[in-house]
Amino acid sequence: GAGVSQTPSNKVTEKGKYVELRCDPISGHTALYWYRQSLGQGPEFLIYFQGTGAADDSGLPNDRFFAVRPEGSVSTLKIQRTERGDSAMYLCASSKTGLGKLFFGSGTQLSVL
Amino acid sequence: AQKITQTQPGMFVQEKEAVTLDCTYDTSDPSYGLFWYKQPSSGEMIFLIYQGSYDQQNATEGRYSLNFQKARKSANLVISASQLGDSAMYFCAMRKDNAGNMLTFGGGTRLMVKP
Image (cartoon, rainbow over all chains, first blue to last red; front, side, top):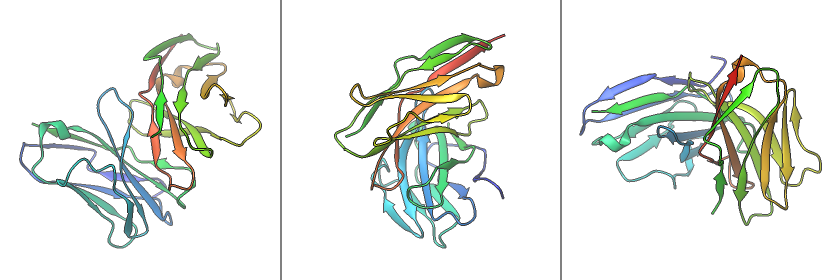
């Protein structure tokens, strides 16, 4: 597609469940980023991939959060044992290199009941 | 550590008038980049404008300009000739150079354009 695609656009789950959020970056973009945005706040960095490897995962809040990008394109953010505090908009972005302009997807709104 | 501060939670502007959205930042890095993004209700973050810390001139992109005052550590966004479609959240962000493209965002300003 022409832009960054994130699926699903909305995810409702119950506390304690496992969820996967998918990001399909712009074709050819080597860098991929995950951000989390709580209501009324700016996005917060979670993790950055350069190719298949996580170049920086310092923003992941705890070990319940994990992300992969096995073939250097699509990425999946995985959250285990979800908690109500995980409810937020999860934004994915990609850039052609590690320095170019960031292009964001429309996000996945996660609601943990 | 980097910090971005946007002190205006909400702003009103009359259609066709100009508006300035404030942004101050704190960093000890000599080389950095400053960004403004627009987030409409659809949720997507839309890139507006970029200013490098060593750029001599203020950045401009169409109706958007960035008033960069390095000594004051401010990077205010000026939107000229406001349109109804400009109503959205606006975020200022900073990137530390040579550290990937990770952005630190401010808390945002909600701009409402009145007809």
